[in-house]
Amino acid sequence: MKLLQNHVEALIFCASEPISIEELQSCLSEMFGTSVQEVDIVQAIDVLTEKYEESNFAFQICQMSDGYQFLTKPEFQPSIAVLLKQKSKKRLSKAALETLAIVAYKQPVTKGQLEQIRGVNCDYTIQKLLEKELVAIKGKADTPGRPILYGTSKKFMEYFGINSLSDLPLPKDLKVDEGALTDTSNDNNIVTQES
Image 1: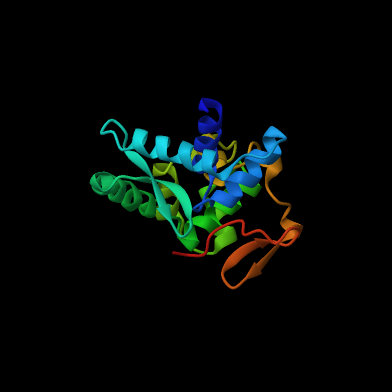
Image 2 (image 1 turned 45 degrees about the vertical axis):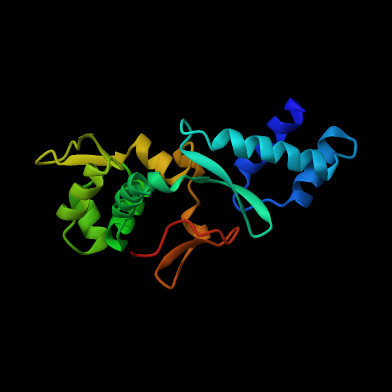
């Protein structure tokens, strides 16, 4: 029973939306290679629900829309609200996305080169990207005045979910469509629209 309970717990945890008893039964039956009874699944859910009602857990199993899902307990809503507010501040403006795209594809690049490509002053945008640690100083150019060279950072890779710059789509695969850059090779949205 403990093994079944652990698998039920894992499936509910991984589900991005409420998972039904039928879905649980289908997954578990296929995984175990034998029919898993609905009553056993319901019993496992009851044990888990009781377990997560204890005060040392910040989340619980909730039944909703004919399924089950892990949700945080209401008393933790204030801290979650702060996190969501902070994350919303991390969204990038259209200017920041344009500048970041140029840095990613042309790096190392100077502020003068960025401004020449964008056609506008980039001081504020570069400062914001440096503060968000999406862009890093990579040295100085061997040109008169020795301007600072900018490149992407490790946090840039994490932000966009890539492992290396070679994972970026090729410029020929990108098209401008209604204010967003879209990967035409697989129709996945690469960057968000201006917030």
